[in-house]
Image (cartoon, rainbow, N blue to C red; front, side):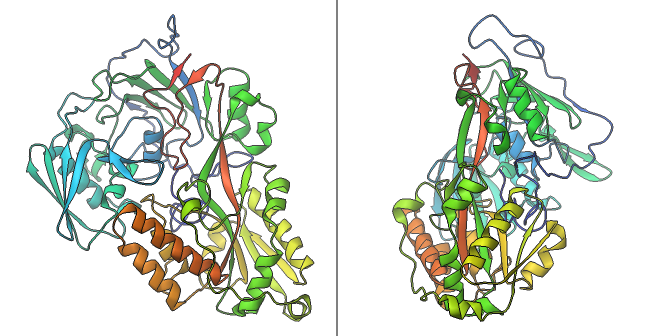
Amino acid sequence: MSSESSPSSQSSPSSTPSARRNPTRTGVRRPLLALGAAALLVPVAACGGSPGDSGSGSGDQRLRAVMAFPPAQAMSPYGDDAVTLSRLSVIEGLTRIDEDGAAVPALATKWRRDGDKGWEFTLRDARFQDGGAVDAEAVVRSLTAAQAASPRPRVLSDVRLTVEAGGERTVRVTTDEADPLLPQRFANPSLAILSEAAYEKGAKGTQVNPAGHATGPYTLTKVNGAVSATLERNDTYWGGKAQAPGVDVKFVADGTARANALRTGSADIAEYVPVAQVSLLEEKQIHEVPTARTNTLYLNTGRGAFADPAIRAAARAAIDSKALVDGVYEGRADTARGLLGPGVPWAADAREAPEGRAEPAGRAEVAKTKQIVLATYTNRPELPEVASAVQQQLEARGFTVKQYVRDYAQMEADALAGRYDAFIQARNTLLDTADPVSYLGSDFTCEGSFNISQLCDQGVDEAVAKAAGADGLTARHTAEMRAEAKILGADAAVPLVHERFVQGFDSGKVAGVALDPMERRLITADTRLR
C-alpha cells in the first residue's frame, strides 16, 4: 500500500525508496518507531463477543489476521499507519478508488466542479463510530487538520486546499491551482474523515486518535503496542453491518512467521506471504495480486555511456524480462509490458508504441564503452538478485559491468545526482493519487524531483504536462500513455518486471477478502468465515 517512490513511497525512506511498505521474501523492512509505553485503549463495547469467541455458525465467527506492518506512528492517519487502518476497514474518506483508478462515492455521494479551482461535495447520511453525525463541519475539521499536520500527508504535498461548509451536508473545496485529481486525492487513507473527539490537544500539539472515531464497518477498540489490535463490528455503519463480529489482529513483521500462522491454522488471513514461502502452502491458500509497482532499470542519460541513445537502446535490447520473472521471482511476477503493468488494468488497452527509439548499437560499439556502474539497494532482498541477473544480461551484450549494492539510505543522494550509470529500483507508479501523472512527472521531466535517469526531453515534458492538465478519465488515460510512449522511446528507463503480492487465506473457509492492486483494501464488511 502505500505509495512507493522507490522501494515504497515517494521521496525519502517513507516517501522515496525506503522499505516502509515492502513485502519481501524474508519478511519486511519497515522501521518501527516507538509507540510509547501505554497501549491505545478505547472504551467501546464489544458487539460480537470477546476476542477468541468463535460463535456458532457462518457469519458469527471472529476473523484472525496477521498483518505485516506494526503501527509505526500510534495509528496516526497522516503516515503509513493510515494504510493499515484502511486495509482493516476502520477509516473512510469522501471517495474511494475503483479498479480503473476513478473516484467513486464513499462518504460523499456526489461532487461537481465549480469553476477551474472549486469543487462541491454532497455528503451521505452517515454516523461516526462514537455516534456523531458526519456533517460538513466534521469534514472541514478533518481536511483542515490534515493540511495543518506536520509533516503533511504526501497526498497534499503539491496542493493547497481551502475547505468550507456550504450547508449541513455540502462541502466546498477550493484549490490553489486547477486540480482535476481532487476526487482521487480524497480517496487517500490519510484524508480519512474523523469525529471531533479524534483530535486531542496536548503539550505537543494536536494528536489524532482514530480509535472509535472513524466511520468504517469496523471500530478499532484496542492497540497493544506493535503486537496486536482488536476490532469490533460497527453496528451503525451506513453500508450495513459487517459479516464478522470482529477481527483479532496480530502484527508479524517476519514473512515466514506469517506464512506459518496461516499454514498451522492460527490465522485466517495472512498479509503479504513471501515468495519463498508460497510453495509450502496449499493452492487454495495462495491469492496473487498484480500491483502498481514496476521494477525498472534507470539509465543515466546525462553522462557516461548511456548518454548515447544507441547505447541505451543496446541495454534495453539486452534485458530478458521473462528470465527475471522465472529466475528471481519464481514465476510470481509479470513480464514487463511498459512503465504501467497489469496492476493498472486500463493501461494495456490505452498503450501506444514507444516513439523515436534509436537503433541499438552493435556488440562491437558496446564493447568500446567504459565500465558501467549498476547500482541497487538491499532494502528489498530480491533487488540484489535482479541486479546480478541484469549484469549477466548486459555482459552478454558486450558491456563491462560493476555492481554497487548498499542500503538505500546510503545511495539516494548519489542516485538523484546522477553518479551511477544505471540504477534498479521498485517504483509505485500510482503514488498517492491513484494516477500515474505524478510519477511520470517526478521521474522523467526536466524539473522532476526523482529524475534518476537525468532525462530532460522537451517532448516528454510537453506530453506529461498535457496529461497533468487533462480532464476526464478517458482523456487522462490517453494522454498518460502517450507520455509513456515518449519516455520509453527515449530509453531512459527499461521496465524489468511488474511485481505481484501474495495474500494468504483458505478460499474454502474465508470469503470476501479484497485483492486490491492499490493495497488500500483487504478485510472488508463482506469478509467472513464460511
